[in-house]
Length: 196
Image (cartoon, rainbow, N blue to C red):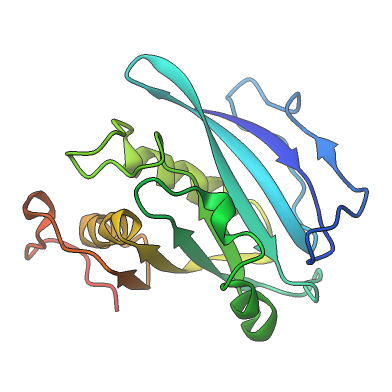
């Protein structure tokens, strides 16, 4: 993995505040980016470069930090996973914004490859466990993001991805999978995690 960071802050209404910086050159030899310990309020876009089927693929991750976040804050994370054919940008300025501002959560909108999450029979062939581990690692570097409290809302294919992640490990404390069926390849077993 390589992290290429494009930090474009907005004032919460979608208007650029003029703080846009391109940190794509700030990578260390280990592939980890040098990033600050505080993620400012507003909307940010990160790009994670992942090798999928032998080719490098850029995957966006949008992060919405509430307007009142400061150095003393630590906000739980709320992931929004788009459905098949969707994009993470559909959440930007959308229905989860109220959770961010009203409940002090940080919303995270990652991107599936080929507008899809790899559940075994999808357009995407990405290793999603590897990708989400990298997203979690990236977010854990910020002091105002509480990476120990992760929740997820997924729609359709994104809901199936949440089911899969929730069964595979302890990625999420709670999930809300909307409009999905659990594929036979991803049925829970006794050894799986049990999110709320």
